[in-house]
Image (cartoon, rainbow, N blue to C red):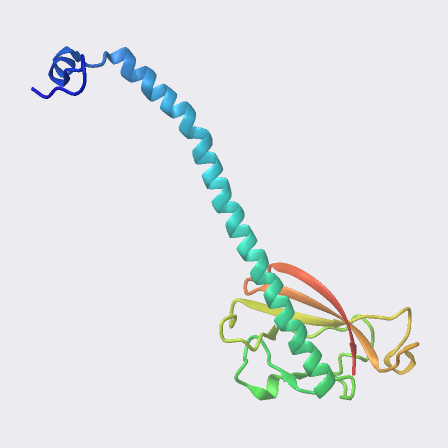
Length: 174
């Protein structure tokens, strides 16, 4: 027998343990359930909030990528690829205000492009966007005041399944 200190006999304690009754087990499980339900709810809510935050951060990052893409296309006249056929350069769109023709985005306010392809390998096929030419207080591209070399565009971001995610208005000086 192992003795530890005065008056402590481990063997005696082990022999005196009779076990727990069914009532004590049920009460212990009930207390455990009452404590664990709120903890599980908090954990599952935190997982949901984390996922929503991650999705929103990704959408915000995509909007910034698209903004840069559109700004470069307006300023430099670079082409933006069609969403359905990104490999076919003949389907690419020129959204530069300097481009002229029957297909020009700037013929009248409210004109918008078809769905466009985001030129980023991580986002290919997951997002697409449209660009709409906005009216600056009734002005046309030729009579914009006070900055005739600025266009106001609305970038509309969609998921690949065409769910509208976010809009961004941009004024681009070209």
